Length: 124
Image: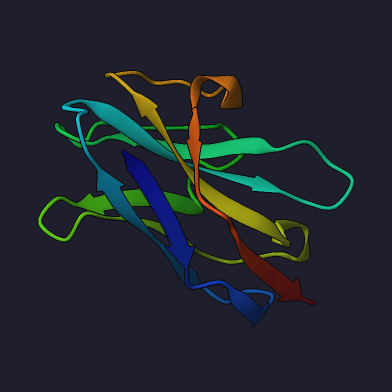
């Protein structure tokens, strides 16, 4: 009933901006939150930013605040991650995920639905 498909990753230079997209297909859920996570090689998956779909309330991890911005387009059923001033340490596989209900969860265990991920590589 839920399908998430990320796109927009690639190779960029340090200091560049990049926008990732997540196509969100949902059936039988009326409220949910969509979030972006990332996982770098050898590191744990970490939460970045999230949005409650219906009211567009957003929430973010401290380390992401300021450079990473989430938005969503309800008519197109798309979520976006705008990333600015990218650094080499932002190199990771980026995932969008969905958690049923209204929430502000940072914990990946609260998100039962995941996309396949899109790779972002930042060269310095």
